Image (cartoon, rainbow, N blue to C red; front, side, top):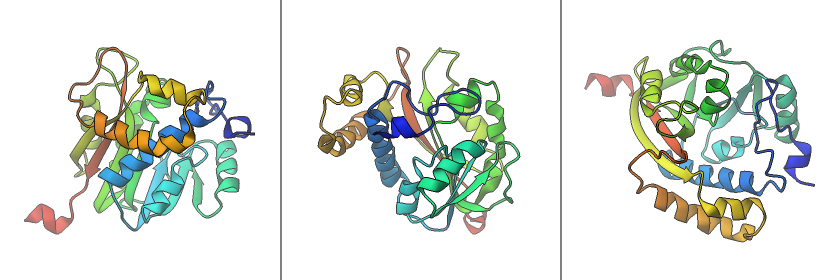
Length: 239
């Protein structure tokens, strides 16, 4: 039995939170590994508190804990969070949704939003609720977003939207780095179990290195990007 058989594929709005065609769970496993490596490389080790917004069943929470953070996951679906809490009782779980997340300003050293904007927020035409996130970041902390970009396609938000949305309340952009290509043939081989899982680590390292050289946002398919925003420490901003 795989995670595909036991975990929710759709959220309470009917938007898929996992690839319904990934019946073996291998594509999700690979993408989670790739994203974990991207976080380790570009964000690095830290400490303090992190918030995983739209955490779903907690796919990335173990990675955040390995980076050194005390993890809280928040999601609008109580149904999905019950599954997350049962699988990972060591973390904190909170029902909530943007823009009215139940946390005080400057509560977290790291705020994360992984694969939430394009689907489901943009799909539901409510992506502007993301302007509520910068207030949660402590001085010296970071807001990290993973989402997809594609030029001249209304199903995707333009790159400028991300900076306009997240460079408020004192946050400034640090990085926008491509980490995965959606039309890479190897991902299909992975999904159908034609590549051994023991190769995933090597493939992920190679893909991150390959993608880091990409300059232009693609038109024919989307690339997944890692965005990092920082709130400078007060003394740094004054110097």
